[in-house]
Image (cartoon, rainbow over all chains, first blue to last red; front, top):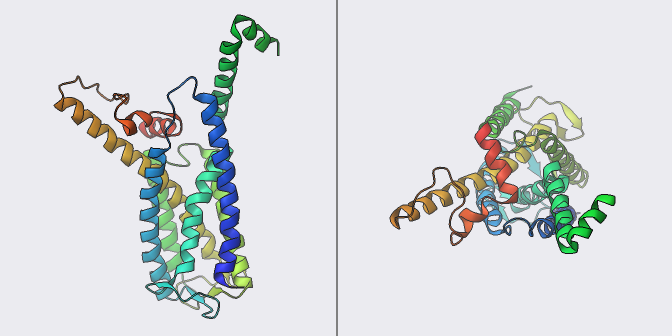
Length: 141
Length: 152
């Protein structure tokens, strides 16, 4: 098994986690949109871009140092041969995975207040839609 | 047997913790959530490492910088600390980038108001609806980071 083949499996798992987190975020945003300003994804994407750039540069620097001083070695027959300095390109998959997996897990865990805010917004919207009678039904439930 | 690599990692992790504490980025934003996120990340990357080691892709180098303690064949003790650092750094960077960009957008919105003669609300985050980034910065996910950061 090559380094890229292993990376593909783990990056696949990361993608699935990210998909689940995006879905949850979408559901939450839809629930809260009625009561608050529409949440734009743009600032999140810009911040992620900046963090990605910084982490990839740091990875390039520190991975080269780590390999340079001999902390880790690679079987040359199992890596692609694409390098950034002396660091195999495959190593960058760890940084990319961290940048996607960790915020996804963070989102999936959700904070109590976020979940409750979404629930409250949904309930309020339902009540508003159904009118006064709807509020009573909501309370009875 | 050497402690150089471990010490460097511990110093770096300490740095992550200090930045986190100062700006309320990860553990200081939601401790339990951060702990679980970090744990999931470290375990995930350890499994990735073990699969890589098992397939013979990479192996531990023989250096005098490491303690020589191995958690599994070719898996040095230091790798756990490296992964903690990687995960903590990633989350600090993501939250920190957001703070930096939001602050910059707010400054820009404030100076735009100054130049157009509009009153400047001190510390106010609610800009005119035209300045997209400043307005949306007050919504959902960023607001808790900003408040916690202010408290820390």
